[in-house]
Length: 158
Image 1 (spheres, rainbow, N blue to C red):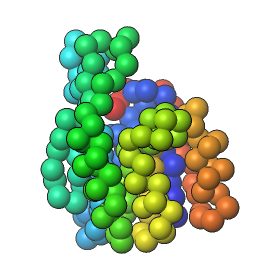
Image 2 (cartoon, one colour; image 1 turned 45 degrees about the vertical axis):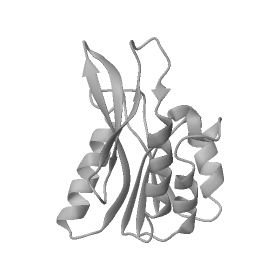
Image 3 (cartoon, one colour; image 1 turned 120 degrees about the vertical axis):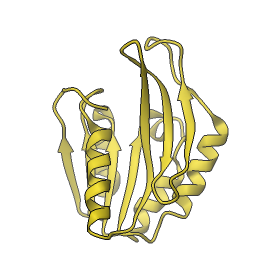
Image 4 (spheres, helix red, strand yellow; image 1 turned 120 degrees about the horizontal axis):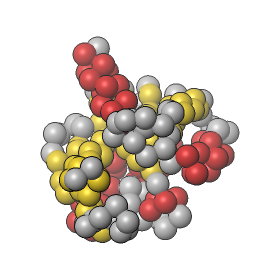
């Protein structure tokens, strides 16, 4: 089963993923993948970290000087993240936070996450997808897997 988590910026997608990870671990399930955690400065998210859920390692993923600027991604972290996803299955719960324009439109970022998701070597996959990319995700996975879409309303969260 794939759970697609979507919602506007600040809706709490990462917070929901973090809570799901905690619940799964309390049940004794193996949880793998990457959680993307933001760091806020002056009310703006300016730094992103990638957190490997199986090994606990955390690396700088991207940063910017202001919310108006594009993210500057760290190439070494993207490579590392792809190695994390390449070894993330089999597992009980696979977490992919998130697949965005970098992956869907530019063919960069967590590209190895697609193969991990499509391997079906998990009980549950939790995949964060931007609202504008939900149709693409559903089209890609609907034919071969059970997909459930969870849309979060705008709110306070990460």
